[in-house]
Length: 277
Image (cartoon, rainbow, N blue to C red):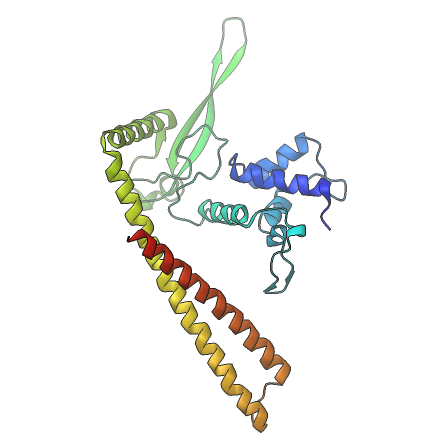
């Protein structure tokens, strides 16, 4: 059964990640500030949050190893689309990804953090912050933060880069802003019809690619079914190493997969047929 109190927490965690752009650590801090505790009466750690965001059971399925059941509506807390959106964001935010379309976080003051690279050696530019002290006449000391993008290779392995070490964040971010505004100005000048046609063509191409993949999956599962059907004869003759129960289970699984991929093929064909009218 679903615990209503815990359900609300789970929904909030997924909402913060998708809608607010919060990372695991920031969500952990948020829950701590709100006084939300886990089952043990302790604060949620970022590691726990990370595991929760990857827990497919919240979509209403039951898991045993690699086996996943169908969705039980009464157990569903998170919609499958929302869960997949989270997995996609986690992949795009991965520090191992060379190029990404989403920021590593939305908290920092730097616009291009994690998404800008050195033009000399190609290394990622990281953000560093230090402060400059000012001594006022009244004796008060103020510190003005100074944030810079620096080349990782230049600061750690100078022999790998002969370019500039750092770039002032405000200057580089302003350049990024100007480029973005120029792109939007260009979009405003384009006829809406051409934008719609381009997007339509992209969707058709994506649908065709999905159809090709679905056909390949259907053929593979159908071939697997035929192999199991042939194995039945061997069982009857006493020549197979598989027992009948295991063989029947494998056959039913292949049959279900073939049915699903076959349905996908039919659906995609209908979409393309309707689009081409």
